[in-house]
Length: 233
Image (cartoon, rainbow, N blue to C red; front, side):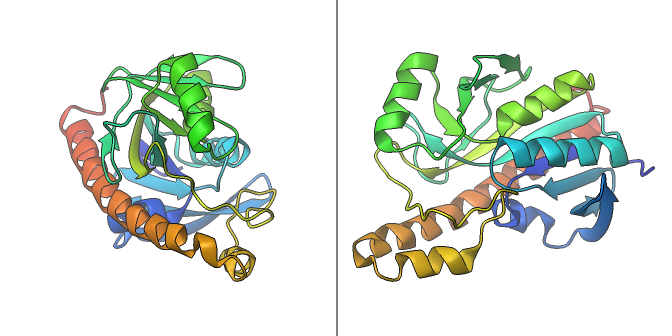
């Protein structure tokens, strides 16, 4: 078993690529499924796919293979308040699962992050903001939090805003499979005949690039702080 004590769970590699670009890539299997891990000293990252089911599988794999002390849910999120802009980084003090209303405290940060099962439209964002008094919405943090709680591990979340309150992310049905993997070819084919969304696609790419850079900077800071404190949240 590897002696890695800090685990980062993200949905997609592009969310944390600036952080892991020089990390060692290791492929390991858990319960018949292969995962790609990124290792650097006493930290490991895994990108398990989009959505709570994929996040749950990734957590189970990294917990079993690395036994971390601290688990960080990292990735993109949508803003639920107008004060958050693309590229801003949110470190929530609380994570709520919109599916069952369960919650988890992180012991750090401020504000509330709510996890939803699907990408939220501007209208849905306003509903979530009012119902949960949340500042941002993602899809995976609540699942990671539950995994950490079940294993008695410290949990934190770091999310970078990729879509602002009034921005609607272009969605192509079928571009994300049952395993939570985004198939870019299907997505491109789906928008090819929808020129009215091309501008939003370009803006999404620009916002995501900025969010990934800022997220990775914050993750480096958090890793260094955890290492200096002996991994105590």
